Image (cartoon, rainbow, N blue to C red):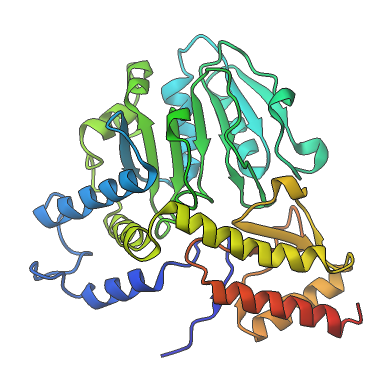
Length: 365
C-alpha cells in the first residue's frame, strides 16, 4: 500500500481515516445486506437508515431543533447560488442583501442578480478580500428578503469570527469550507448550506439546512428539482440522491461525535492547528506574509506569500517532495494555501510548520 501524503487541498479534501477504513471494510458488502452501498436502492430500508442517521448526526452536532430541515441535494454549493434566489428572491418584491468577502460570495451575488433586485451591503474587493466587515460597515436594507454571506472564503482565507448582525432579515450562509468545524448560533440562521467536500464528505453532495417557516415563502411554479419544498416533502429522495456521499457523511459525522467528541472539541483542535502556522508566519520577519488581516484569519485555509515567485515555486516543489501536497494558492491570490480542515491530523500541521521554518532558514532569512 502506498503511504498517504499530507493533503492540504482546498477540496475535495481529507476524509477522516476511521471513516475511510470503515467504508473500505464494508464496501463490497454492507453487514446484513449482501450488497455494496454503491448497489443498494435509495428507497431500501438500509439506505433509509443511513440517510436518517446522517441527518440525525448533523442535527446533534449543530444542536438543531425540529424547526429545521436537513436536505441532501445534488449540484454542490454552486447550485445553491441559483436555488436560493429562485426560492426566496423571485417574486419576493424586495431585494436581497449580500455581504461579499471573497470569490464565492461574489459568485453568489452574480447569480442572484438574474432573479431579482440585489444590494451589495458590503464589498471586500477594494481591500483585496483581506478581511470581514464590522457590523457598523454594513449597508443593509431593513426590508431585505434575506441577507447572504459566506462564513469562510476558501480562496482568500478570511472567516467571520461571529455571525454578522443582519438587522432581523433572514440570514442565509454559505458554510461550505467551515461547516461542522465549530459550534454556531443556529438560531441566527434561516438557512445554512455547504458543499460536502471540505469537512463533511466527498464531492457530489450539498447539505442544506432550512428553517421550516422559510418554505412558506417559496413561490409556485418552480421546477420540482429546484424547489426546496419538494425535497423537504420527499425526505431528500425525490429522485436518486448522491447515495455514496451521504453514506460517507454518515461515517464522518459519526467520527465527529464518537471520536472527536463534538464541535467544541473540533474547534479547539482546529484553532490549535491554525495557530501553529500563523505563528510561523508572524515570526518569520516578513519572509512569509499572510493575506488575511489577523482579526479575520481563517482556521480552515491559511493563505500566505513568500518573498518572490521563484521562492514560491521552490517551496511548492520541495514541500511536495517532503510529502506536503496541494499547497499552491489560487491564481487570484497567488502564493500558498494550506487547507487544514477537520480531518487534517495535528501531526500534519506540526510537520508543515517545521518544514516552513526549515525552508526559511535554508533561504538565509
